[in-house]
Length: 347
Image 1 (cartoon, one colour):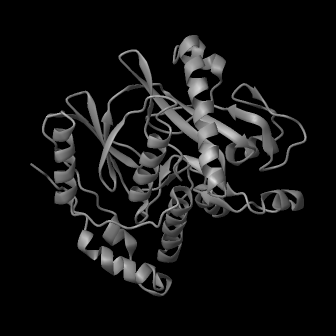
Image 2: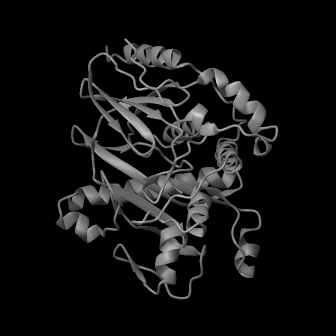
Image 3: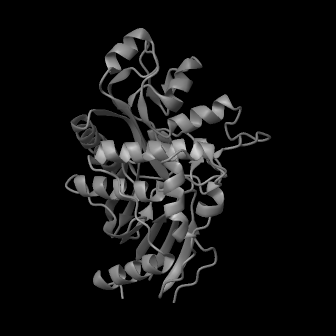
């Protein structure tokens, strides 16, 4: 049985499309009224539910996960007040594409994507870290470097670099995976010392993360993009390490355009990029970095639409296909998930 506590008003999607793609910036349409709600489901044999910053995660029989990618957007570990139309579909479909494109490197959790924003897969015991791989000096690494520090997560950073320069080879700068609050930098040595991963497990995590990053760069290069940095999450099931969650999506990764990259670096100009970093930069410019006492700036309809278009742009560049918005009711999404659970032997 499907219980819907907050109805997602799907029949208004066409109205949104007419406004957003034909000058929503001039309308009084309020996105939040139409895209804030997200159904809460109850599945047969459901044993747990977790609401993350972006995803709603349902545990089935303690062995399977149903992940629903919402339109919520977070930055600096804070969920921003306005949802982004089609973001959930973009994240889910990019992640599925990348998981399928890397399954020869390491096993991953995904079994099926029964709906545009839904995924079904294996439940693993997660390592409480994120494996952040960086090919360029950007984002947090660039801010750390600009502060004068030359060590990040126990990794030495070369002298003489400027923002967005390529590292001699990709580096891994792990962070803790916090259930609440901010993730924190952590070194390989601390991870092993605290028992988060054994030395043997770390060696596998490192091998997988670097190989996945290399594959991601190959895929991006074919599309005229540079995979700049990203993060991976891993877990264990029956003694084997699996890749979990999303891979190479706009939320977990940063992409630059190859065209003009070198010229912009030589001139000291900002790089043209596809990622969520522009949202962080906008927040910083409006005096918000997730710190106590700071207030999230107002996100008007034009800005929300801009963010949505950037997510869609990344999808089309990375996947190489036109993005097709899909409008399913809560009931149809639920029915597709149930059918997938049956087809995959869960029920």
